[in-house]
Length: 296
Image (cartoon, rainbow, N blue to C red; front, side, top):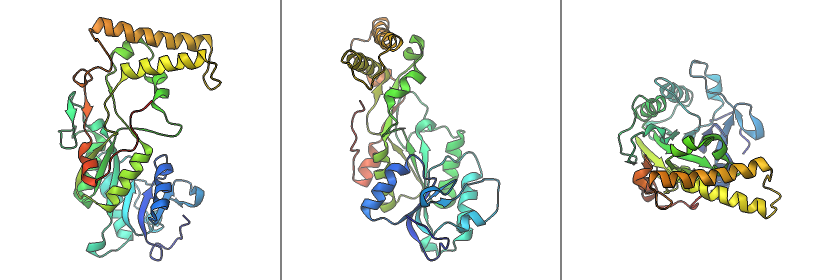
């Protein structure tokens, strides 16, 4: 969407502050749904508004370039005390609105604020000292905003199986891996639109695809599949001796750990995986459910 410099003449339904990875799923959905939007990037590419949030600056000009919006979506992390309040106050000071037209602020957060090794939902105790949690609390208190705390993001070229080489470099690494929680970018976009249409002031939500994945189970599946593809001559799969040995090693580690830990079958029971996330409440509240099921 092409944005003019005069926000008074071009109000939008939804303003995306930070059109990054999430926006690649959100913008097509907004277009399909006929929701008028504007988006910012730090360099103003692709017809977006050039905007960079500086929590230490009180210069108003970057905010004056932003349109009025019913919903302001903040996709970048806000940290600690002061940042959320500053952003809200800078936007409101450059967009004088009647009380009934005050924008709804929605911040994308992370599920890492819930740390207890047991079942967690949006109402569970969280780490109040976490810098992101501090900023989320401040946003809700200052603007009556809402927070969507997202599980691991995937979709498109971002695939969980590609994370394995980074997070599991040894058998000890794999031994320490419990649960994995994810949510697809398309479901994040659907959640944002649902919250735009059915806003919940001062509410923190937990968002996942409603699965609790077992890293051992995923590792076994991905390694076995990679070996089959290599044996089948799949041109998209690297079939070097080193890679073959790596996949065979992963399979062996899973089997050895199952024997050593007395695990009879995969996936392990959720009680053995540590923190487990329950995101049913959000989906039930907005009346939709994830369309992306189990990751492969």
